[in-house]
Image (cartoon, rainbow, N blue to C red):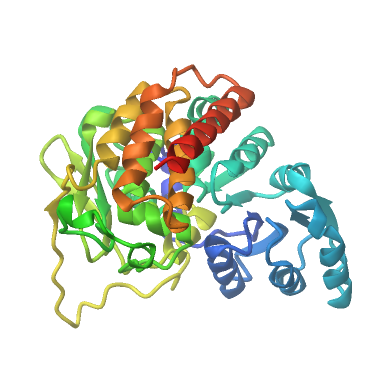
Length: 408
Ligand code: MG
């Protein structure tokens, strides 16, 4: 975990990685994937692509990425997309090995490299996370669901320092903890993690004012451009709930010591409060290429990864407490995270089904989290000791959430 550092590592903190790191990129055609390739393309001396993997919905883009970055292997999760991929690669003169299906993506996750960046969306990313950790790769984790859903499994496999956060808040927390001292902070020196939230498009609304919001309104996120599920998760603050669980798992801090504060400007990405009352914050304009570059180059910093805050003009940064009545998702996540085992997997899976139902116009906005709470309340929590157990809980939650949203 990034909370632990060696003195020797710290000497390299401000320099670029001194050798070219090979990177396996999972979810290469998604938002994090394309931004990761932008970081890699602009730093050819620091990074090269060893393998690419994607779902299969955007074969043209995947083939063009392979033509530009010349990976040794290209994996596609949908086996039906393989013929089209082979054809597109041949047309572009790309000779990469083609890996097919979920097993192919897992093979890519274990492909020889320095760092695997898991940018897959959803609980599907768990298999790849476990495959990369088992193969001993450094894992840059943008797929927070795999950690949340498979918490006990992932924690059992990951050795200290093997798991690096790509989520902007957790990258910020890692940087604040790193800044605390040459050997990292004593656990007793950390009083609180303070996770910032933009508040989403409905910040400031009361619960009553959230009753009639539409998918179109929920999809208009004020600061980050992301996929539809995570954008709705930002509107309900389920994303922040998931991030509280993620912070607990990454940094081993109790839920009573992880606060959420609303910061609409999204410049301060999170903070750590220390025992003496000091707070260290990490600030940069919202741009995922910073946490991506830091995870790929860790503990080195990639020069010019993003433009810094412009201090020649005036800024106002505001912070306000979270309204737990309007946005009960964070309190529910704390409850679920404290229960542990299969409970976070159920929260995540039920939410994905409810978001789909909301986007399809079948579920009111407030019913998303209410339904997740109902599914969580019915679930018999078990230890999450195997992938099968986690997937069974995930599947049960989806079935139950579908039943509940079908009758709403
Ligand atoms: Mg985040």
